[in-house]
Amino acid sequence: MNKRVVVAMSGGVDSSVAAALLKQRGYEVIGMMMRLWAEPSENGPAHNRCCTPGQMADARRIANLLDIPFYVLDTREVFRRQIVDFFVEGHRRGVTPNPCLECNRHIRFDWLQGHALALDADYLATGHHARIRHGPDGRHQLLRAVDRQKDQSYVLSVLGQKQLAHTLFPIGDYCKSDVRELAREFGLPTAAKQDSQDLCFLGDGDYRRFLRDHNPELLRAGPVLRRDGTQLGEHSGLANYTIGQRRGLGINSPVPMYVVDKQARDNALIVAEREEQGARRLQAERFNWVAGRPPDEKFLAAVSIRYGARPQFATVTPLDHSMVDVVFEQPQVGVAPGQAAVVYADEICLGGGVIRSAE
Image (cartoon, rainbow, N blue to C red; front, side):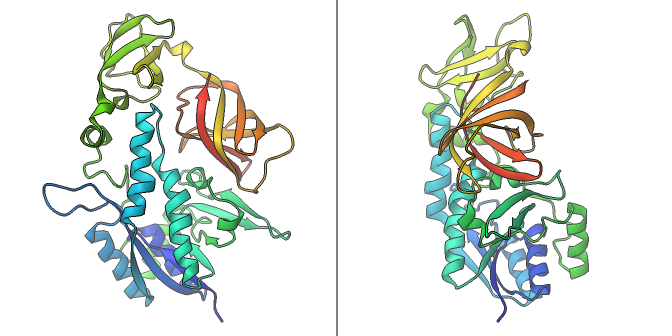
């Protein structure tokens, strides 16, 4: 009997090709799309960017072309609770939350994978650019994609052995150009479709406007301070600024200044000169070790501090099961609490955690 796999379909080229490849390889394929929460709109029904009527129609069309079943799973409430509320709460605490990480943690590889396994599926497959290596000892490794420019292992660093044992990434061995060529060979209408961008639940892509509408308190004015407490001006709300930002600070300074910290308790925006903004050390919490357990001792690895950033050499010290200390060989600019610090050993993603502090 053929293995059964549920493919998370989005109406895009990556998930479409993933489904086509699995069907070609002899799997029993079921297409499934999640209907996610979107903010109400004055101009009509609310639609999440990941599941607009057009994308849903594209996904259904692909399923029909491949002759596979297709279902839509109502995920609006759990998405609002786990992702949207998390996003707003993160900004309330003055950090830079990463909803994509939490979506993979709670929605795709918990909620959706749970539904897939409930259908007696052996695997959940997605169109992520990443790879999985299954070892002879029954352990599973998360690997970076062949196409480093599209690699998504950073946002998959929340996965563990239980999830990887029932996950497939069919396109991780292909470059993006090859994925599009495969779509043309399969006769899929998504071959030239552009990749999605920005936060999917924002109707207009403006997260500042979203926060202003959903929690106006987050955009309360406060002081712009140097590290020594000298006030240089007033900010328009901490959520309006990002770590490393230089322009649009509205301050009077003879030299360029950069955002280095957001202190929610005092509603203060901290700025510094260029040479003051690098961080040599960070601590990350909620750290997930893909292997299921941390190494026994500190070790040298490469650490990425944001999605798409080149991993940099650092000494990583496990502090306990869910905390790590990271000391970089060179100062890193733009280390933002709330983002993830993801640890690599060559092409292997060892895991990641949420940056709590940096200095």
